[in-house]
Image (cartoon, rainbow, N blue to C red; front, side, top):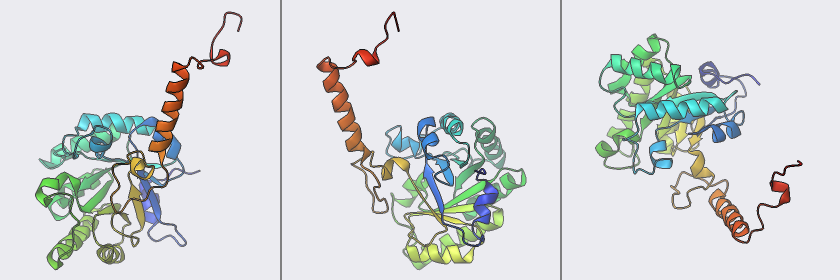
Length: 270
């Protein structure tokens, strides 16, 4: 199986008979190895701040943490394209700082591309990264790093002004040289307009079925957090229940001294 690359992602937009792009998040080696080859794109998202670290938003995630988790995921992938989020304030201060930090995510983390939130306001930085050979995936609509500015995790693009602003963001990102754009938390009608208007693939999360691909947080659709199920997430498994059941069975056998048995033990003559 040929490795999926930035070229593969971009080509998917125009390839005859191409299937929608499939993307998931992953934060460690075990899950990366499990999904490798089953999906097209793995994103090491700064959502690890919420999923792995238990915070209420992504803002406290550091560059060093993103490098660490990306390196873990990269070790488990052979065929799937790997992109990583640039965390909050790792690219907004200066273009030079963005270049340095993006370079570390590729050279130390092992990612093939970085993902950056924002549109018109960050386009100049993205242009420079692309010029220097760093592939960039864009991210517009509901941008989690701007949660406070947006007034919470609200659907974006409900008003005509918001819709026009998001369309202009998409066009600015395309001009800046991104190879794909994540559309998050926007109406299906708006994602369809953007998808039809730009020449790079769109990948939706909470943006309806009209995008060129979809991304979800792996733990969300595996049902590992039963307390969290936003409208746009479908549970394809109930692993929280299965995990609790397995742990309960293990604990019972240990307490009853029925585990470990002889077959699970080492002996002098074995």
